[in-house]
Length: 86
Image (cartoon, rainbow, N blue to C red; front, side, top):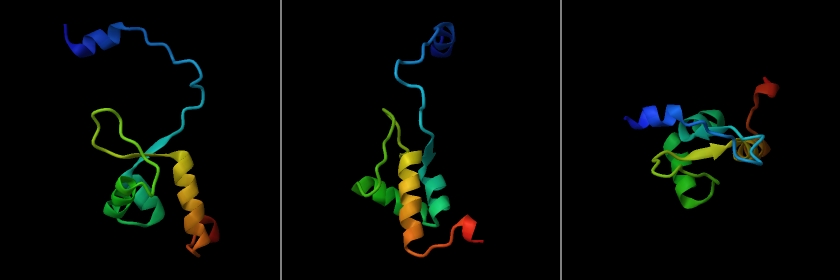
């Protein structure tokens, strides 16, 4: 039996206390939203300047909606245009 078949047969329950799971974004999505190069965002994740995480065994950094909101607010503070300004 394949691993996929075993997963499909399981009935998974939502863990308690996980009602409002936040959306997460990739480095490329955050870079595009903020107007930076993806390598810059990746370096900031690696250096701890951006709160990000990787799933076990994962290679990609993931950034939460909360973190992206904070970065967007900080970016607006330096005079950057926002969509509302246009």
